[in-house]
Each structure stands twice: as C-alpha cells, then as structure tokens.
Image (cartoon, rainbow, N blue to C red; front, side, top):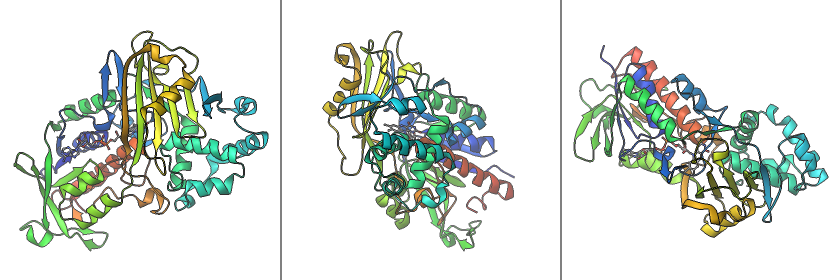
Length: 450
Ligand SMILES: Cc1cc2nc3c(=O)[nH]c(=O)nc-3n(C[C@H](O)[C@H](O)[C@H](O)COP(=O)(O)OP(=O)(O)OC[C@H]3O[C@@H](n4cnc5c(N)ncnc54)[C@H](O)[C@@H]3O)c2cc1C
C-alpha cells in the first residue's frame, strides 16, 4: 500500500503543522511556500538586537496551539504578562481591575459598576457559550450588564482577547469563550518571538521527512469533475453525496505540474479561491469573509522611562500597549521591546501613527528619547475572518474539508469550529490530519476525500 501523497500550500504555522502531523502519520508530504522564508504572519525580524513579531503576539495557554504543539513535542518557552497593568481612559492611566483588591481600589469603575462586574466575572467560567453563537457581543453585554462603565470594561477585555473591535458583529459565543480562556489560563509571550515556533515546527517537519519548497508559488489546484478524471477516479461519497470534483495535482508558477492525492491549502480565503479558479462556492466564501485588522507600532527602546508601567488597555477606545520584553526575551540587555496597537473595525477602520504614539505617551512619557528602532504598520490582517453572530459564530466558519472537491482541504485562522487566531490554524491543521490519516488507513488514493 503506497503512502498518500499530500501537497501543502503555505508555510505559516497552519501549513507547517499540517505537514508535520501528516508526515508523522505516514503520508508523503511536500510543502510549498511562495515566500523565501517560512512563518507567514508568525515571522519575527531582528532589528538592532530587538525581536519584533508582526505586531503583538501572545499564545493562549489554554488553547489549541499549546495542545497541538505539545503533541509534536514543541514546548514554547516564555513568560506570562500581568504586572504593571493599567486601564487607559481619556488619555489617563487608572488601575486595571485584575483581582478583588484592584477591582475595589480602581477609579475606572463606579461602585455599582464594580459590583456588577464582580458578579459577571465570578459566573463567567460556568457560562455555556453554545447558545450564544447567533447573539452579538454588543447584545450580550447589554443583556448581562446595565452599567455603561462595566460594559466598557468587558468590551475592552473582549478586544484584547479576540483582537476585535467590532462588538456589533462579533459572535458572543466566540467572545465569551475567549474571555473564559484568557481569564483561566492567561497567555504566554514567547522568548525570541514567534519565529521560534516556526523553527521548531520546521525542524519537526524536516526530521520526519517533509519536503519543503521555498520561493515556490503554487498557481492552481489541478482537479477534474469526477466523471472526467479517468480510471481510478471514482467519485467519493461525502456525507451521502458524491463530490462534484476531485483533486489530482498542483500547478506551480514555474509551469510544472505535480500529481498528488490530496491538497491542503493554508493561505487566506482569497488565496484558496484563486487557486481553484471558477469555483463559485470558494469565491463567495472569500468575498464574504470579513477580516480582523489592526495597526501596530513596534518600538525598540534603550530603556523605559517608567520601568514599572508595562501594560495599558484602552477602555474608551481600541488601544493596547504592552512591554513584551518584560515577560519574554525579546530585547538586548537593558532594552525594552514594546508593542502599541489599535484594533481596527466597525466604524474605526484606519489609524494614524500619531494616535499610537499618544498611547505610548500615556504609559511611558519621554519614550521618544530612548528609541533605537521603530516600525509602524497601519493595516495588518490579524485573522482572515471575524466569526460573526449573523453567520453563527465558530460553526459558521468554512470547514477544513472542502465538501464539493474530493481530496481538497484548508487550514487557517478562518477555518473550522475551534479557536481564534493561531489557535484556529493549529486546530484546523489537526483536524485535516485526523481526516486524512483516518481515510489513508482505509484506502489510499480513493479515500482522501471521504
Ligand atoms: C498584528 C497581529 C497580531 C496577532 N496576534 C496574535 C496573538 O496574539 N495570538 C494569536 O494566536 N494569533 C495572533 N495573530 C494571528 C496569527 O499570527 C495568525 O493566526 C497565524 O500566524 C496564521 O498562520 P497561518 O499559517 O494560518 O497563516 P499565514 O501565517 O498567513 O500563512 C499562510 C502562508 O501561505 C503562503 N501562501 C499563500 N498562498 C500561497 C501560494 N499560492 N503558494 C505558496 N504559498 C502560499 C503565504 O505566503 C503564507 O506564508 C496576530 C496576527 C497579527 C497580524
């Protein structure tokens, strides 16, 4: 019985994870990445000794990424943030409520707001999110909290845990489960940056035999209608329906065609649609996907004017600033690596660098005299799809298996019913591997789309 031949298109965290899991399960795997290097949005660049992720990156300690990395023997190293945290309102810092004492002492909430928030947070772990998929986070806040100040605070916590400012669209199922995860297990800032995760996954993939092709842009998936594909191309029953088409190869930008049994697409919804030209379902999914965006200012400083002030979260606006090097090794000795961010979305879809500088002025007045390196990025895609209430939350996201094309799968932070951000990329990679490996043991070649 020969191994199932799988091509993975995309060498970010999702594609690398899928490749590593599949090769370990016995598939013959080639991964194609159009860039010169692996990592996608999990890249880290070194500037003057500072390790800049592509905007602030934090790994959810209770999420799918930790589980899947663990199953591959990768144990991320780093630190848990939390000290020196403030709430930012009207340009001024206030104590950020993080526990009973700070909740009682902060002046960012009224007494009535404090009591309401305390009640909500005490019951949060027990909330069953499954019934909240079609309710927006705004609606949920309005039904659960009567005070403007407590709503604003939970809105800010939602922004920081989902990276999403559009609470009118975001499904409450997603927002509340992210809050539950963040409050129960917190996050990890990674020593050396997220490229260390990429390096570890690359090493696992190579050791197990994945062929990695860099600077290799895939142009299209070669597929055929089931009845056209010739001998051995039996249509495969999927949930009782015959798949309309099946995959049998890949065409690269250099014109070469590679025959495969299954293809895993690990790019954006737009990438997936363009790789399968003429597919109306994939084109519609790409057109309908609303991305989650952010503007970021990355700063490498020779030191901090206020070493005890490490984090601030906007309460009356979509602001975030965090000294990542206080929790993880990301700066040279004595230096500080700081991420400032504006969550974009809803009515507020743009950012000026000066707005982010003003946030830094509030946390670290005098920071400009310490700048060694800086990088402003006005419009980054944090995640390719905002799981909205209208589409049913997480279960409304496209499935990992492309139902109407046998042998075609996808992976990413916009795919499948589990997790947000990188957690979704890892979870969808795991589910593709599970599906393909299960069917491989039944019958390679014909069963890849079953
Ligand atoms: C500012 C910012 C902050 C973030 N913060 C967090 C955070 O705190 N926590 C968290 O969990 N996540 C965070 N994320 C999200 C996280 O970075 C992504 O979810 C994750 O890296 C996505 O990995 P991926 O492999 O699914 O996609 P990508 O990293 O986008 O990789 C896709 C790859 O596919 C390649 N590709 C596409 N088409 C082709 C083709 N035709 N041929 C060959 N190659 C192709 C691309 O070049 C790319 O390398 C953040 C993102 C940003 C931008």
